[in-house]
Image 1 (cartoon, rainbow, N blue to C red):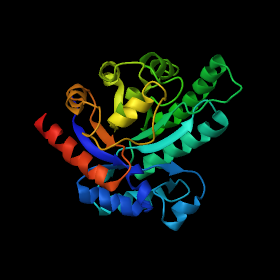
Image 2 (cartoon, rainbow, N blue to C red):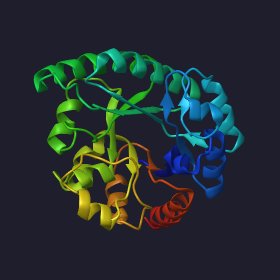
Image 3 (cartoon, rainbow, N blue to C red):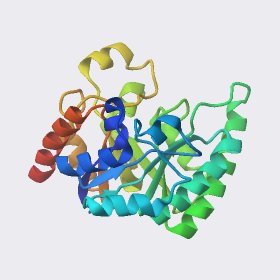
Image 4 (cartoon, rainbow, N blue to C red):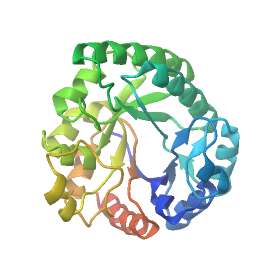
Length: 278
């Protein structure tokens, strides 16, 4: 039985027009033990100017590690979402993200199948995903990094669909990054039954709550959402989620996905209390 820790995805500072370093300090101030950076290739204008939280993989990963060490916080993983169905993008992106994660001290690289090409068939998409995940998993195995597959797009929006991607490549480096909000909005499989189903393969969890308003408007119509509301203010039964994950064989970080600093504070207060009680 593993332990549950609290982290926050760096999306929580996106709407505040603040840089990554500011977000790390704020996350530590709130009380989080982990952060989950979003990484990109090349240079990004808003990030370079200090108005956006994403980190370039052209930057030294040890800079990020040193920054986190300064504020007594760790990396739960990298938000490295890239379209697995498009190997001309995803193969080299994932391989670089894995190497960067190993140097920065992030044990998990999270991704999903991404938007598919408009002209490919499902059969072709699965061949392309097999190629991408094979290439990426070989690098991940060498570097001791896990690849977290997330329910987020057209094929992973159901229990059976996520399983079908997970089963493409037999590698100890591939696991599940379960997203409570995306799975709920997809509306194809009971959120808690699905979590129980993947619990033995769980390596990371996106703690995303969905507001009652968004649930009424979008459930069954979308396959995911960028961020949710504050945990405890939406539809997700966090006591039930925690009770399931308590039996996971791995230590799991609940990486909160919300859109503002106040929501991150509310989420921390709600989840930390429930985890302590459990």
